[in-house]
Length: 266
Image 1: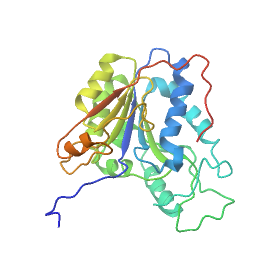
Image 2: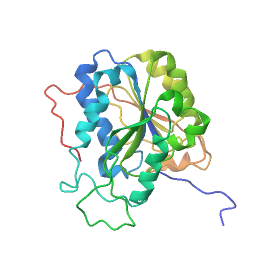
Image 3: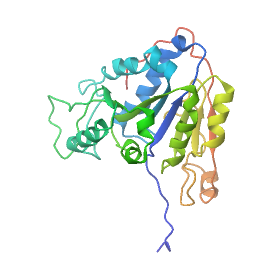
Image 4: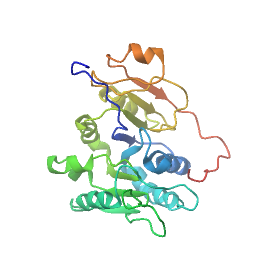
C-alpha cells in the first residue's frame, strides 16, 4: 500500500550532555531535578525520556548522581510517581541491567531493584527508578555500545562521566546512535555548546542551562532527523517538512527564578 514508504515514530534513545558550568553549586538542585523529571516522570514511558546522561566530571565531583538518587528515592507507588511498565517485564529490565553490570567498571548508582508490595501483574514491569553508571571508555567500545544504547521504555537510564579532553568520544557516541530524536545540551560555555550543536543531528535539541529532553518551554516543530521516513508532529508545517531533514534547536538559558524551590517528583 505504501510502496515501502512508512513513517516512523518511537520514543527515541535520547541523550543529555552536561557540559562545564561556571557555578555548579547554584545549579545543582535544578539540574538534578530536571534530570529526574526527564528520566522518570510518567515512569519513564514518554516520548523523549532521558535514556543516557553524559555528565562532565565537574558535575560528578559536585555530587550530581547522589542528588539524582536522592530525588528518585522520593518516587513511590503510593504517591503515583512510579507505576507499571507496559513495554517490559520486570525480568526484562533485570536482564538488561545484568548485561550492563558485566561491563568493567559499571555499577548501579541508585535503584536497581524490583518494586515490592504491589499487585502489578507479571506481564508488566515494576521497577525502581534506576541509573547504571558505565565508564565512558568502556561504553564506546563496539562490544559494549549496543547494550549501553538499548532503549528501555521505563524508569531506567545509563549515566557516564567525561573530562574536557574526552568531548570527541562523547560526540562520536551520539553520532553512532541509531535514533536521533531529542537531545539536550546544558552548558554556559558558548564554545562548548556550539561545538556540540554543530556536529550533532538530532531533530529536536534543547540547549542552555535550563535545557531538558521533555517538557518543552514552547510549542515548536517536533520530529527526528537523519531519516527520510521521519515524521513531524502537530502542525501544517510539520506535514510539509515530513520528507526533509528539519532540525529544531530551542535555547533556554533563562536563570532559575530567585527563591525557586524544587517541586516534588511527578
